[in-house]
Length: 180
Image 1 (cartoon, rainbow, N blue to C red):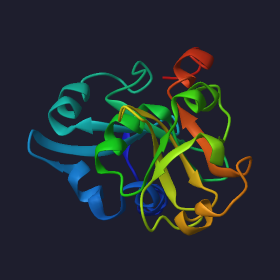
Image 2: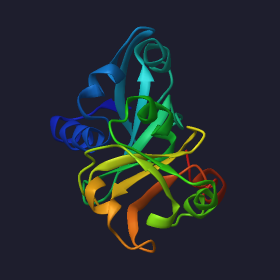
Image 3: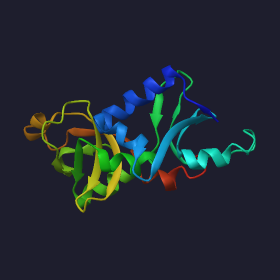
Image 4: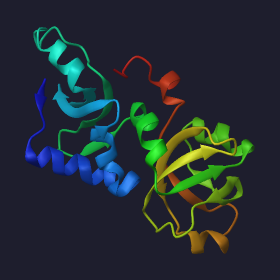
């Protein structure tokens, strides 16, 4: 387990900025203690510094995971967010999308959100902006990328895609063997 390099930190923070904007500082400087990001086997973990000090006594080859997995770096050095980061992204999300109850199941099976399933969308959401997807009961379901801006969503066909799916809580069941 090692700290992220400058390039890895830049790539990861650019991805996080698409979802939570300038609220990234709130992830690191929390009232319950200092937190940091660490890399282990191409996965980025969000861990408290207190827990990190305790884990230093464990050899790296014996360590499976530590803290919360935020995502992983692909072989082409791109950062991919995992659904395990949703609990930390949702409270700080700048742009949100609420889906109707009938469209929740479709989204949780890995499908994109259609205009017919869109309940609400945050004002001034730009096209290709990262969004957190909520149920109408304000339960975070996952995250994706806005396929249309807020203004375009008002006048688009009901069967048009408005949010591209990236991750959802259904992945816990669909990919439980590979999530660490």
